[in-house]
Image (cartoon, rainbow, N blue to C red; front, side, top):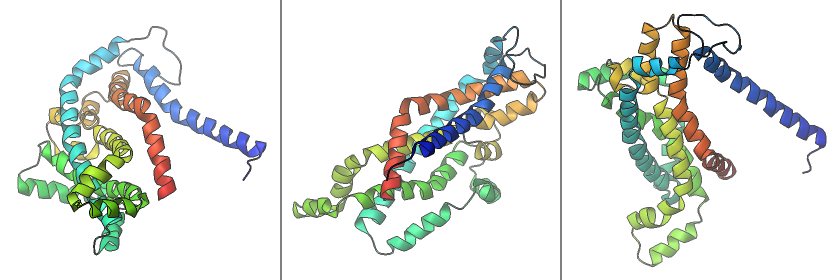
Length: 274
C-alpha cells in the first residue's frame, strides 16, 4: 500500500507536535531549576544568572548518594528474578502449551487491569502482618509480582512465534524440558529479554507509590519515592525541587538513549508476532 505525500507530511507533523508537547515540561523543569532558591519562576525564560549550584545543593539535601545505592539494590533484586520467572512461565504457556495454558494466560491478562493504587492498601496491611513493612523487601516482592502479567504477556509473544520444529528436533536428540528452555529457547529470546529488562529497570527506578507508602525510611526507598519526602520539606523552594527532579530523571534518560534501538526493535517485534 502506497502512502501519499499528504499522509506522510501529516504523520510527520503529528509526531513533531507530540515531541514538542512531550519536551516542553522537561524544558520548563530544567530552566526552573536554574533560578535562585526560594523564588517562583514563571514561563520558560532562561534566568539571567543560572544557579547551577542548585543541583549540587539538591544532591546533598536529598542524600542522593544513599538513594542511588538503595535504588540500585531494588532494581538488581527485582529485575533478574522477575525476568527469570516470567520467561519460564511464558515458555510453558507459549511453547510447551501446558494443560490450562489458555486459562493461565487469561489470568495474566486480567492482572494487566489491576492498578498499583488499587492494591496498595491490602499490601500495606499484609506486609505489616508479615513483618516486611518499611524494608526494601516491602517494595521488591510486590514489584516482582506486579510485573508478572505484562512480562509473561511480552515473552509469550516471542515464544509463540518460535517454530515448534526446533523443540521437536531437540527432543529427538534427547533434550529434556529444562534443556529446551535453558540451552535452546533462552538464547533465542535474548533480544526480548534484554528489552523487557530495560523497561523493568526503568519502571523500578521510577517507582513512586509503593516506595512512598510501604517504606518509612526515605534512605531505603527508590529515588522517585524519596522525592515525596523531599517535596514535603522543600515544597516552597520550587527551583530546588526541580533540580532534584532533574537529577532523578537523568539515569532514566541515559538508559533510554543508550538502549533505544533495542527497545524499539523489541516493541516492533512484539507488535508483529502478537
